[in-house]
Length: 315
Length: 310
Image 1 (tube, rainbow over the protein chains, first blue to last red):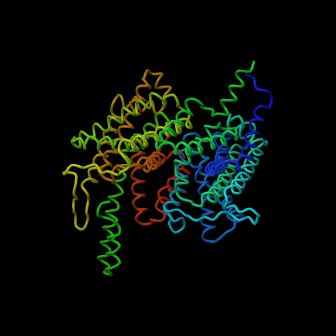
Image 2: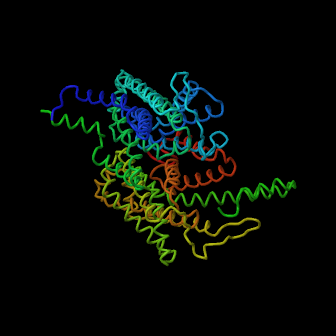
Image 3: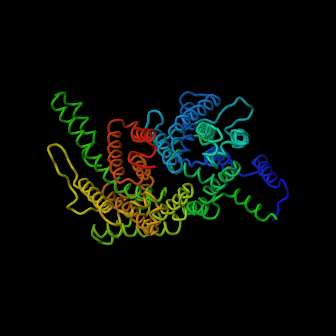
């Protein structure tokens, strides 16, 4: 089958249009799912910068979600900080931590990078879990108020908050698209394909990878800020190892190196987890099957598979 | 947890101002914590030794390793519920899990060499499936494996209690380490395994059946994890979530010790066991931080771990 030119653009544009206009018409359950999905989409897209464009698998990305979320949890409940303050602190802190973690993790590649990011992710999880005076440990921080931006809409209601999250999503998509289409992003792709060649060409390979990781961490923190405001609750389970793996799944399922793919993956996984658990207690079994099925049937993800399919069937 | 906990000693120190008593209580505290740390390290070695060999040979990031641990404990539990003796429970538990490991490796993992993302996601899928199946088969209640009478009770030395079961754990780990070391260093198969760890391509070139060796090592790793699960069943018990609770520890041991190094796994296990125990006793608020931060620091200096080769 040969798709007409621009078909994928039309598909993406219509999907985004649905995200824009559908919410007032759907049930509150579905609206909650959509809100979660767009927030997780931000997180998945930020990981895609590392996984899809730098070509490194990170097992610690939930740490950034946690840092953003705990910044909100602590500042908003204890100090009554405003949205803009928590947003700034969350993103700056996540960026700074990514700056430190990048220094440690980027000394390695491949499996070693994966393992070091796992250990670093566990450091943050350990603090959230045990530093009770700051984080309230396993109980988590509850009662995070919805943000007040001084706008005429109250974000404690579902629909305005959904649009706030959607604005965050478009902002992250815009920034990340700018990054990956810039010469900087193209250099990252070059490094992914052949690090030695890029080095020979005179590029500072390490610095490019480092900056990529730092940007991804900052945007991950941004997702964490939105998540804490949405959920009203922050706990160590937000940043455990299983969450990090789940974000990897979102990216792999949607198609790494495509940005829009991981967003799609986030929507699918959030939908699957919540919708399937309505019908059966055995949803972990199904989620496990999705993990394996993704690698067996769509190793390049959904977007990757579609691209390959349209390319192969073209004359 | 056994009777020797920090709480008891800190009350002694706060109530009794006599410096000599305080000193003895302090020494007791250090000895019992050291003992606890070493025995936990022994358990970790059982779990992580196999993971390290698997890593070293096949570079497989196996998230299912915690599930082998959990399922090993559960299978052993079932054997004992049916009236089987402890030893039979150990044998059946480890063999069953070895079989599962071989099946998983043969059907999926051997195709994914060099694709760490594929390995992580596939093994994570299996981990979730096993977690759910365990919940279906054994329910959500925590159980303790009934241990034989000769392994219960404590050796009492002065004011200190040394639970026999913890001593047993240390003995098992030392024995396993010895057997592993001897068979790796002194036997023909061991030499083949080491050759495959060092350079699979050359090993294949000189006529070593890398496929069979890899499968055997994967089965060995799963067996050891299951053994750790059975042993832990009489110690911390078997309960849902134990798989993902222990998995990061196993990974940290492997990362710090260096993938594929038995010596590294041994030293890594001891370090993690001790850091975990002393961290929890001395700095409860920062305990995981005191465990994972030194790990990250070691990795910052030596990305391949203490005894690992790139």
